[in-house]
Image (cartoon, rainbow, N blue to C red; front, side, top):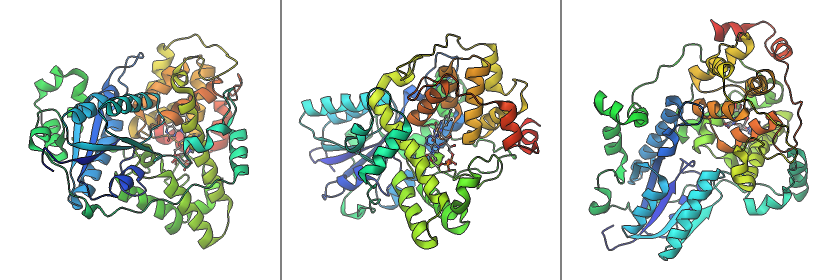
Length: 464
Ligand SMILES: Cc1cc2nc3c(=O)[nH]c(=O)nc-3n(C[C@H](O)[C@H](O)[C@H](O)COP(=O)(O)OP(=O)(O)OC[C@H]3O[C@@H](n4cnc5c(N)ncnc54)[C@H](O)[C@@H]3O)c2cc1C
């Protein structure tokens, strides 16, 4: 494209894939040059109220490794992924102001900040007569389709699921990959060549990866970004290390369902802690969108068509509905998801702030081996089982009387599968300040250890 031409700008966020990609699918329908943009959000490397950054190195590395894979994929179709670091709305609106964009395409994201960003972009684009098209990329169902199933009084998951089932709605089939070769890649020297604005991935990687040490310290937290392209050590105790990108996400899906047939026994194994197949481990790919929830849903139906109906695949869809529920809840509640009283209509107050016990909890030094083992696994790998997450969250809130928001922030810092809606939704739920609030959603860590780690293998593994 030259400066006078026009292109379709696709703003990628937590939807780093080309399969089942509604925004890309729509943008590629006309033979108009495509411009793919990803902005590493500077808010991710900003501080929290709890004395650490919002994102740790492991999480940032996972995100950027997926961006890199997407770059490779797009390059194989002759397209360029432009990348920048900054406030996404500023960068994208600056790009629109520079001219040459005839329409913007993006998938809706349920996070509060992401929703605000989208609103700002919408107003900016509308004022300039640039259409902005939003799609439901990460959900099973569109918010407009199911929002009436959530009532504003804080209705719980079960009524949502039951009502949804009664509607008979089914997620639509994943979208095919559009013919990207029909569209050329957009490039304008005066725009994309500008320092610090939008540069192609390779240039960005070179800039970010090879800064000298003194520049890293001068940039404070931004130093984290400069470290992104150095290899992170893999803990030898780790049973499963996800590889970035949609090809690997789809491979894991295929292996778990059709090669190992682990889905068959998922209902019985899903509360496990050791090994690589007790649960699907799809969450890191789902979080950055290199795997779509609709693909998982559709493949689970194909699994049943091949091997017959079974409780494992049904239970997996049940879990995907939890994810769905929290995503729509996040849209509904906005900022309230981060408030101390959460989304509760009945508030069971917790006044304590982060403290020494909180730090011990984070560092896996509470003295309770079952808790410490989980927190060590989290620090060393960026992941923890669902059972583990429930028990350590309950321990922080109910045993240590800690502030649930500090725990949620530590998860946000550490988890490679961090997802704003699932993380804050689950924390509020366990702290008794979400929908369906109960002050006594308490997990006894001794009983949990006896039940789920009877031989002590998990504890020995992660505390030695
Ligand atoms: C305190 C707490 C914080 C959490 N934070 C996150 C988070 O930041 N990101 C995240 O993806 N999940 C989060 N979860 C949900 C759940 O623990 C993880 O999704 C799951 O452990 C990921 O592993 P898996 O993919 O093997 O899960 P599986 O058991 O194989 O489940 C398949 C998929 O179903 C969805 N799912 C399963 N359980 C839940 C649940 N309780 N809530 C929402 N979705 C669910 C996930 O997308 C998951 O990948 C949290 C749970 C708790 C209790």
